[in-house]
Image (cartoon, rainbow over all chains, first blue to last red; front, side):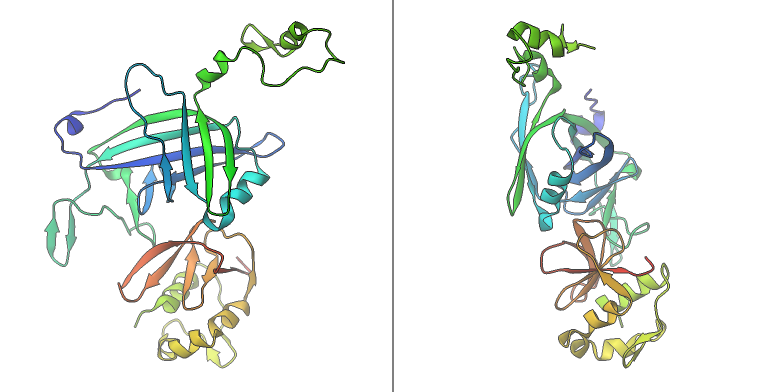
Length: 203
Length: 110
């Protein structure tokens, strides 16, 4: 749910960044970790989680009340091939992915005795390296821009592309994505009923 | 005097047990001028690699606090994607992406 405060309405919030989360599972189905990235230029700490700055781009996403955007393509810099290694040793597909947009007012900053109303916002108290601590910034709004599951991905030497689909897309499928085996089922209806029964897994 | 090497050694020294020296060098974190004076030679001869190799092992994937060596600098890994390094020209720490030119080492006791 999108909750915009008066800060944004009064144009007091001057900066926008995005936070990306991808749940990773081992190939045996057990949870591994949540990968967290940001398109900001320094690290971001939000809800006590560190978001790593990477070159990430995603499709232009128009926001309206029609809720018509059901897929979105993202491109991530494949740093040191670390992402493709991750993709090959764990399961991306069908796992949670989200894009959160944060609008905030950069805190004031003193540099060489001069006070700047809006600073960079990096905080070196807890870390050796620059990091933006969103938790201490009060003038901010954060809302989920897109939430869904990773549908497909492909990796090259330099980039990793992924398609994120809303979970609503599952309901529009006429048939299960896996085909049935004629040796096992005598008709396609039997195959469908064996897996899905009225939109849920047939147990 | 501060450079990338002294910043890394000072960072590691408060967190891990470092050896007293290597080769002709005696590690004294309170007197890092020994390294700073000879820094160009130290890095040019790639002695920083031999120095860290004496108490670290080479690893393929980085994790937090691994040592990241390039041809002319020493940094510390933040996670498997990035590392921080002290930029002497800007006099501040900055983060960089790990790339294939980086040699990653992990402390034997780390």
